[in-house]
Length: 314
Length: 314
Image (cartoon, rainbow over the protein chains, first blue to last red):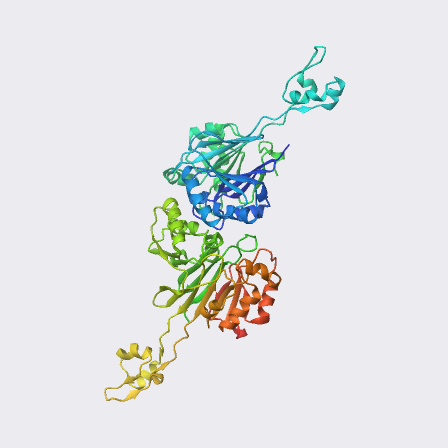
């Protein structure tokens, strides 16, 4: 399987602590790095995780609260100092583009890379697409406009069975259409079914990130069936009124979203500074959705892993 | 002696490393905290150092390079979240005031404290004064406008000798003028010399911070005679051309400034990311100025200490 993994660089909430950093994570899809939010300290956590700055070309900002974007000026300045070339695109709301651009144009005018701002809306739409993934935004329910991001691998090509091709005398020119699932028709008009010549494609994987939100059916619909869901769980049951007042979720509610959305695995994060140990949140979530783990800084998860198959995850 | 100490929160240069954080330090004068520069991560280092956010009311920015100010939005937002009241003043150039204000007015509109910007020039002038200290700026020589800051305690009052007062039958009403150094004249016209009734005042202490600068006689003049000088020493001798090209100093040059300025003690910092161990810089500085130490994150120095009296510093 090709690489598809998640690196948590920060999973605390707005009030900083020595326990967690503000929100930031990096999804690595076949060595292309996609950053989701960029809290203060993101650049140092990239160094700590040994992710390569050179592979980072897209940064997605879920909303314009400081704990989700104050690391951006420092990160972009460091990319410039390191001589990064090519294009770096920040996907953000219009206000963010204006605020970030004003700082970068002052503090980091001379950039060896091209800094682009892709203005996104508070909407359900495709925000990025390349050969291997589609990234869509979807509205969350927070105090200010805020979107989640869903990363779906594109359907993959079937694997050729070389022995079967040789046996049936299939020319190399047919390989592309075979990998797409078409049958092979010999010059004599004989149809050789595709599954005689190929084995199934690797499964396309998916991940969704819900940064800051109160629980919402619409969110559950948007993340339906993903392999891994990161959902904020700022509070425990004892703080539910507070959670809703501030447009956040409890761990229990995050687990309900995961269950209702039929996802495979859940990571909870965005922990309130009130918790010196988040086990209580983990336990509350697992009562509803057993395949839950706690986010933590420098946690690295191979998203091919499935917690429902316990032997697969160590 | 009352409290007068220095907390180094960051002493790296622009390219971030896992070894040092960008520039930030806090001088504590009688439990009033004065922050000098505010690199990314400053708010976490304050937490780590257990300095009290509530005692921080003045932040001085030496120049508008990101590694000296990108921690400001996060720090000010945290002060707001913690419910800080009163006034917080950021002393910075006009451009900085505009850039910081635009972010704070967007990201942290509702502040329980009053955020003031005091616009300073690239000049030698008093930028702050209260009952106990005078803080002056002085121009450094860097690629862009950049000032150092010098903190001078005001002359202190002499100590009363209660036994002598009793012996000479001096009334309490005379104490204020005695503490200022005046003689006491009895109702009979007899002059009792001040030093019969008092002992000398504690020495007024001084500290100077030179963030980013190429060596300059003008800088040496501005920091003349301070008890402790922090001077940048980005490079070692082997990189002198590079240092000057970038308007920085070598450790050797920082030591010459300290010697020529007749300061008592020197701290060197703002280390280039090229050094995995700064002992080479320390040795180069000590050849010229033995009372030198290396800055480091979370280094706490009681500025009453004098390295020229070795037993005083552990």
